[in-house]
Image (cartoon, rainbow, N blue to C red; front, side, top):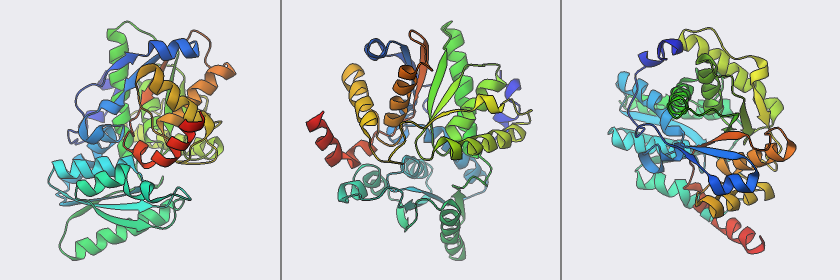
Length: 345
């Protein structure tokens, strides 16, 4: 299996994931949806409340360690799971951490700005910076690199984890690893799935899974649920990342245009904002399985799964693997809105 994935195991990695995460049945949720839902528990990757970012950061911190860095920098939304897990990884490896938080979500309150992941960033000792525009990836990357230049001028050895799509998708290799893990787990259990459903935001998780599955010979449909931008804008992003990953692995690109399946019906009113479908999905999953989903990512992704089932894209009785990418701390940042919505649910 490793040979099929070419150079994957040649990349330096920092150990941040606590072994294979389980695939668990969700029987009560399945009964509610008329599907057989299995959940890949990547909320249990271990470090700092877990989540999909730990898989991606293994490769960035491997590269930072190889480069001899003493400081790591990252940019993301105010409630960035990526920033929180990067700060924890930096603490574990004895590195300084600088976080640049972008204004991606409008009309937020102090709970959003100070609770959830931001509180954890501060507990972890990260130095916080701000960037005023949440939709300017090139500008955010330029700003974080300027901070790195300033640190370098002071004698530090910074390593930047970039944001924009023009950078090599090193973090997506983490979900090529996850695809290998999933295929091995399903084979060991003699289980086949009819579809996989995952969040599609930065594109690292979506593209890495897709390249990994196809390279390993799995043709299972992978539905990416849009959580940041609409399908028309997300499609070329995923295609570009898949094309970039193939030469990084030393393989022929196994992904076709037809493999890129996207659904944006539950995206509005935009990134990090709760809609009725997301709230309903969060409540259903919590009250049927005792499993928490977050508003920006997994809540919208489960809402997308439910939409696909009701639209007939996921046939009644089919077996669906839901990728739980974590994000639990962000729940606390949305406390006032969640309480208001629960009071009328």
